[in-house]
Image 1: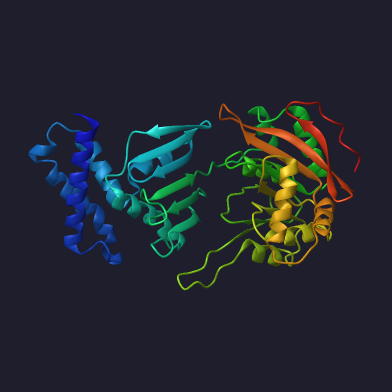
Image 2 (image 1 turned 60 degrees about the vertical axis):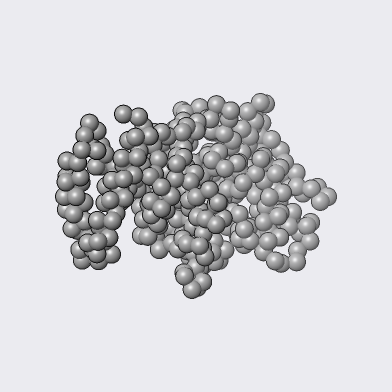
Length: 389
């Protein structure tokens, strides 16, 4: 049996099952939801006796149809696969995954755009996230910590779009990252020295380069006696330390009220007696508050930023600071950055799909209007001696 025939049979079965459940008028009744499995299993058992389903794998077909109606359809086995780090849906007919840094197409697909959309809404429902034509984008975090981004038409004309960055339990330590080949011993020693000296550390890199993984490993190296406050859009840091306070942003509700931004969290965290602040990603006006916190006695803070290298990371911070809407001269901003940031680590995803640390730089002060950078280690060059602190 060809894949197309199998898909057509599944599409017909799912459509019939959907109509059957609608006629039962039970799908929307919370008190009767436990009966859905019984209804679905009974219907599928009857349908499998029809001639058009002769010669097919009944168990597999029924399981896929049931998952399409009540679960996440073809995404379910991908979410359960520990080797997959990212799942990407383009419309309903194309699904891609990332395995070991390489993107691969998945042969399976949703039966149509409507059931793809339903699966996405099913993921977002427990999160209280709104997704419709009026609010066609949504971000959230699944129960296992995986990050999810969804987009619906009209802003995605080819159908629903879904990106899931899967959470991997037991995020790695610096030792474990070194053992994977992400960086050598000398780079690890520099990073550990920066953490132990309570330097403010900025991790930069592109999307999917491993910024959060490195940030998590650096934060794990903090003293167990420290009170650490983490601030994230979607909580995924897992430090494994005894005194960690996790804060997470919240989007506005359907009335446009109740949003809690990263900037709100940062301002509140400063009143919570933090020893160290760890900001998952700095990408907005909270950059100004973060720099001010680092310049007023809060040491050992860490964050990430999207940038192509240490120098670009400084420019990115300048731009984000300007988003705060405060009239500050560029020189004053650079003074803030030079006084706040001590160490910058850059990570990138290589051509072979592997994520590697490529450079570590030290902010060496301000000369004129320029922030000075000293390369401590790079993938291509020699390591410098870590300065006395």
